[in-house]
Length: 190
Image (cartoon, rainbow, N blue to C red; front, side, top):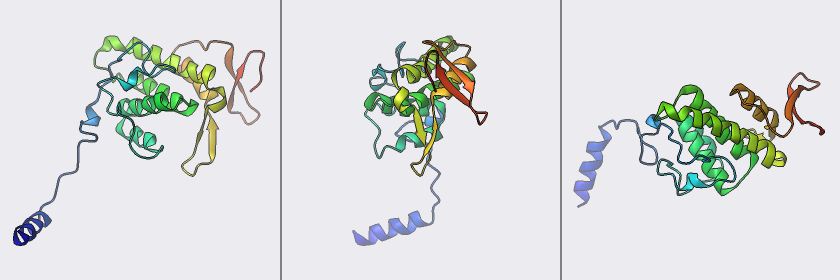
C-alpha cells in the first residue's frame, strides 16, 4: 500500500492542478440574481435563508469577516453573504452592504430576467431605507484593523438618491464642516 501512495504522490507532484473555479460547490462568477421574494435582503425579512440560489443559506462558515470575503465573488455573491449575515445578526453594516450589493446588481444588470431589474432597484432602495429607519445606531463600518471607518447613514441617503428614489421619514444630507455629506433627519441632528 505504501509504495502505491508514494507513486501517487510522485505522479501528482509533477502535475499542475488547475486553479479552482468553484467556491461552495457553485461557479460563483456566473451567478445572476433572481429575487426570491419581494422583500429578500430587506430587514426584517429572512427569506434569503430559504432562497435556493443563496450559496450561504446554511449560514456563513468561519468568523464574522467571511462576509467581506464574499464581496470578492461579485455583487450577487456579496449580496447573499451580507443578506445572510443580516438575517442571522441584524446590524446596520450588514443591511447597508446587502443594499449596496443590490445597487451594484441593478447597475450591472446581473439578473436572470431583465424584468427583475425594477424589483432589484426597489429592494436596494428599501434596503438603504432600512439602514436609516431600523439601524440608525449601528449604521457604521470598520476598517480591517477594527477601527471605526465611517458611518453609513449618508451613503444610504445618497444610494437612494442615486437610484432615483426619495428618502423617506425626513432623511436627507447636508455638507459637513469637512465638506463630506452628513445624513440628517428633519427635526433632528446628524
